[in-house]
Length: 432
Image (cartoon, rainbow, N blue to C red; front, side, top):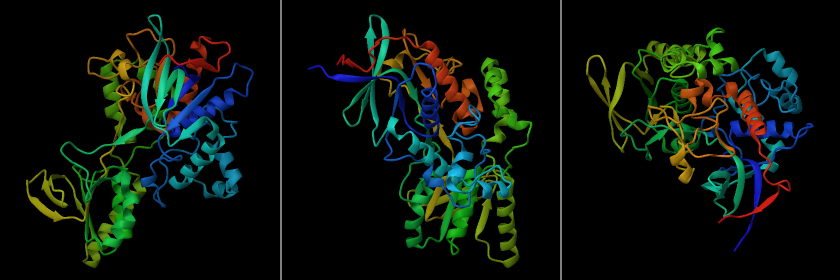
């Protein structure tokens, strides 16, 4: 039995900030004089959400508001953060605040505001379960995208923006007492009812410091033990020259560089993003530690130059000093791993096409400058990645800093490479 399958120029997998920015770029493109680009996005969450588990009331963004969803690509866009502020009646208040870095909850509200303006091109609560190539002779002409609701969308191009996955160290299994910091705010209420006595927070980055500070605030009778291999929390390098690693031009330079130079640049400038903490938060945590020493009641304990040598499901943590080998056993109500995220490998989702995606000598996906996967099979359209391209495009791969520019480049690539297959263009007969 045949069925009509809607054909889109772009089908987006996931609808986080990156694909939201792409949807906005498409909306703006389609108001112009050029041929419209059709698109639809599938998002498994029931509504827009971005790191909801870490939307701490006091946390601020680590990126300027000018690096919103659109400004770096189109400063006059109606989807800008400044226009959001104007709509919310806070533009003057924000200006008087004299701050480049909004509250994280405020920026999330901006994302939701923008997402509501393009919600006609996204299906929430719908997960992509399969991608099947549709052949025209030896060439892949389309991708049939199967969704969890049983529908099928036919795409000329795929844009995969499935975000990052919480990462736990090897050998660590999540459980009732062991979890990743991405679950923080979802856990706090239940923890409050339990009356916890001790937390162990593993990690030395911004999230680890924020978790330690929040737990210290929210549970005044509990001890918070921070465990990390460094001597202390290290400040994020947000100096003006170092921040040029986030410039759009830096992507070109990084992409063209040889592997030794790429490795060196990542080592040089990792402190702009990885295992780095805002200096204000470092100073605040130090003030707390010192104040408690003066008062003789130490609730915030720092186990520096240390590692969690053993962690049990019951929350028993054996902390080992890396310098002396001395071990301290801590009974914790919760062990929170703030150990970062990893990009999702898109190839399992791509089915048989995944085997045709070429990789480099280290097993990493090969990616063109326009963020297209390199394949050994002829593909008429393209499979574009939003994230998972740090090894080819640099540190901004999964960050907001370059999102607006990146989606403009992806859209330009789709338009430039477009092949008009069906002039009528709305539907085709399924090959299934």
